[in-house]
Length: 264
Image (cartoon, rainbow, N blue to C red; front, side, top):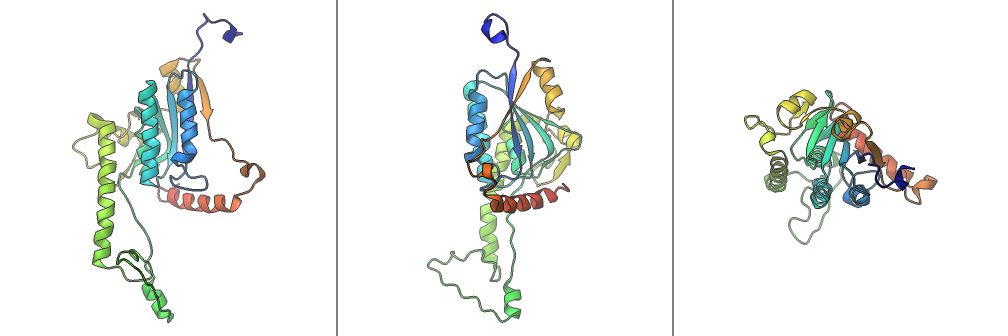
């Protein structure tokens, strides 16, 4: 009946977006293509009091982290709607990049945050194939085309090129965190060497604003009758019939390896 009585004040509502898993392309990974429609609906559905992000991510693609965070910031500023982030197990690397898209960040005492760094990993198999009498034959047009080939020895030039790629990415990440957290950061601490911290210590360092959980914190901010509205992607036609299971299984395995880095 309430909606038919215009002079009765409606309780505040807050769309809740879950950002769970690794950030990247394909499978169940978090990326701007999959999350864009969800984020747009959250900010454009009626007049929300705020938007909440529930984050549990070990990181992943820097570009996708930036795209998702930028979309959240653009809509928050355009609609003048505050954003609150709540970290569950982990918001590390790209996961922390997503958290900083919020106006404030709330942790559990056991949450892991940080890892403000960039990594590029691989394997070197040149000795292995040589021992088995395997000859590697590669022909390129352009001397950098076989850059980082795992079947040949890494050179000093290769290392220099990798560092030339990673350093600007790291600097971009640092600039983003400083822009979003600003004076809240502990200026005397080395926060950008890819270390990770637990809840209370992360709050002391200014990487988060306090220890709090989603429902009680939003009730404190917007009243006991605030409605929390879960927002999620619509299921694709094929997924309704269990198709695409192979791709999802590979994505899940990769995601578990990333979470394992944080003991999860």
